Length: 241
Image (tube, rainbow, N blue to C red; front, side, top):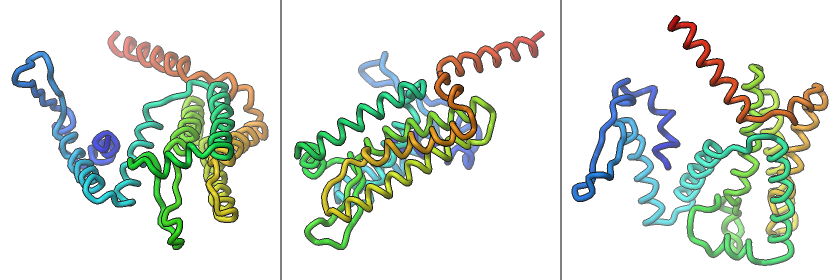
């Protein structure tokens, strides 16, 4: 996890052959099973192992947060909504889901407090009765993949990441509202109640202002990726000829 998260950052500082030469290790009694890796991946795994050991031994909130953020980065990188229509439906459903399980049942809050694993970010407070404020990883990853889709939309149009900035700003505003309301009422809040309308609202308002709402709704990442691949193959064929 940490290896994959750190690898893009450290590859540029390592020798080129460390990133390209693969080492293959086969299990002694199961020769058909093998692990393939590079030297740069080994280097990236060292700090990851340290943070995992730190959390396992000390359960420190900072180690918990580092592991949690690594999960979030990997989740946002690996998951894709495909289209904004799918994203809006997913966020809308989870918007209702989050409200129900936080306001109408104690289940989600109880699980978040009792489950001892890096499934949430912890922030120390000055209140001895409530030593930590919590933010679930789902409140980062779910809106995060929608924000990432906005960035892919910008890239597909070969323009500056204007809609990514709008969606990201919406996330920040929603998160700040969550913190304000949580501290005002001194009670757990469903973060998606504030984040979802803010992210979708900021992005939609910006698109309507620029007259790009039709292109946004018609955007399909799979079709865009296919077109890019076909264009790349065509260019390669021309070079060969």
